[in-house]
Amino acid sequence: MRAAAAANPPMPDYIQVGPYRYAVSADAHTVLHHSAADGTFRAETDIDRKLMRVNPVYAEEMPVSLLHEVLHGICDTVGWRDREEKVDAETAIRRLCPLLTDTLRRNPAIVEYLVCRWFQPET
Image (cartoon, rainbow, N blue to C red; front, top):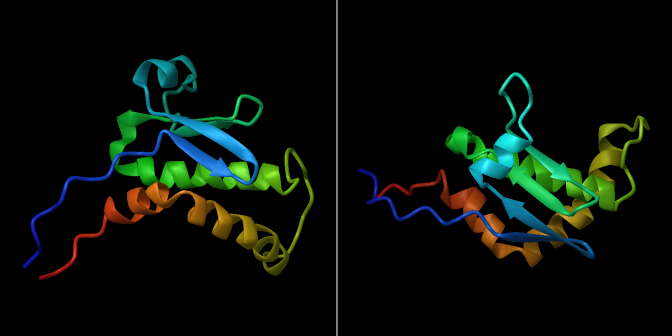
């Protein structure tokens, strides 16, 4: 039997990625203004403005979309912005893991949001 579901934690308003603080928005008006023409917009990161937008229309996908955008922020911070550089999996993991670990440590609210949105322990 599952435990009674606790309220889902909110998506964080800000996420610190290395030296950069990204605002996080799930405001439908802001997101719709930036939507793809075909309406499939899930999320995006505006690196220059340090803003991550997540479309609330796809509520069940929001945690994965937010993590996807955090990874874009991490890639930019480690110098992979708009690069066509091809690297093997081990090199990519070695470059990303230190900053991913730092980002998760600095932002416990994102860990709670990502994990608690889906996890409901058995009793």
